[in-house]
Image (cartoon, rainbow, N blue to C red; front, side, top):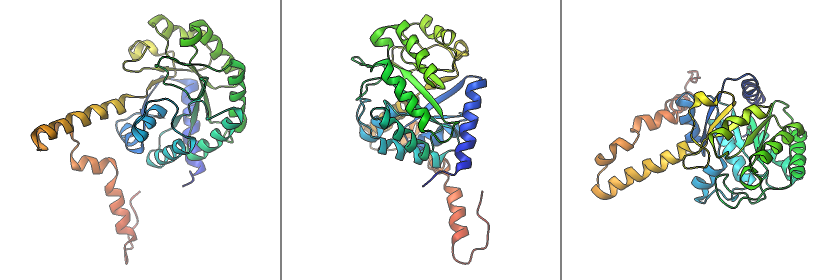
Length: 301
């Protein structure tokens, strides 16, 4: 299903304006349309389509570059149909060289992305908080950024350039790369996995374009309160929904296995009515009634 131009333009312009003017945008990650619905329902203002989450939940594998562009685009399209929020899409390394990046931008823009994040790891990439990462030459990443900005047809589409150089070359080198990527045309930069409070807080002081801070439970970056992160433009919580769902499934299924009854798991199970509300069954019931034979009623908006 193609995405209506006015939907993309509206959400993309809204995201670009918010990143330019602030305040800090708190963005949870979604690995599927259901998680995106919950994010929207709980009042957040944007969704991060997480590559790690798709790898974990769709393929059952770690974040090691196994998801394909086609698989990612299918998830983006489903999430775009499910929610009206801006979508920030994790495109890993862009699925190849600069020419591949051009196609990646075209495909994800068509699927409904409002921002596309690219990183400077060697492909296949690894999670930013894993050991053993490798990065490509900065000049090669600059060409990928040029390819991305050239390929977008909606000039409001936000290009986010992530560097994983902190773990490989050190903090100062990572800042230098982020600065270079901004000069190449990235709208936002993302210095992944700073390792101290001082490093985290230095990032928006040292760089002039909007910045992402990634807060990963169990990761390398210290968990700072949002009040201290006001100079950033995006506070990313890419894994919260996924990790909470794992914990909830383990508790509910463990209780069922031990007791043989749903009663013991009731605190960890959303009620039937809540499940149907999140997936908007009443709206589909109204549409079904409208399109039934002989109906003259208008569908619910």
